[in-house]
Image 1 (cartoon, rainbow, N blue to C red):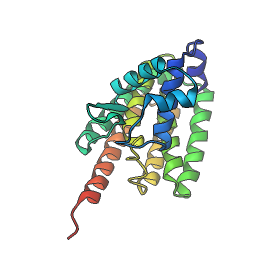
Image 2: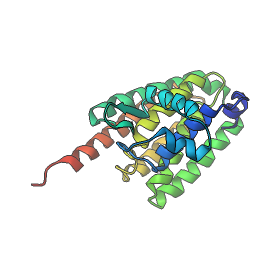
Image 3: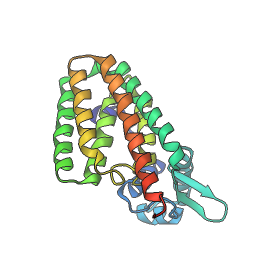
Length: 227
């Protein structure tokens, strides 16, 4: 996502470093939902004081990555099944907005990056690798927001995507969904190449609705009592 990096502030603060470190811990699975995360852990890993780490923790808690518990301190946030439909509806609306606002700015480099993502995603799906596919899925949706017109859309999309991927409640919970997701990505990209932005936006809304429904069904199945 070169454009976003080029437009990013040149001053990378200690709080920024702490924030990125914590996000990577969560997304990599080093810490999982409900697990404790202390400022001391981050301080020792980065060699910084607690002040910027606490600032990063407050910021991530406000975005839903972390939760404060009176008796347990800071833990990785847990997403409830009843919120999944809302999260995916929001993701669909944001994705639709991203292409409506940003698609006119897509360049050949944008389409080349999307093509590369599709090719890698195809290999991940063929290998039945939900972790790789989840990473590539996040990248696909963020590529759609990688325009000067949609920086806030990109930021909100990243935060909402983390709500499910951080808890491994995406393709790890629904591995069979990878091939359908890939086909949907291919259809979205085909519409964007035709510059049919309206159809691409419609496909994105349906793509997220379907993904949310599949995830809810999978979670409901795992919680059903044995007969």
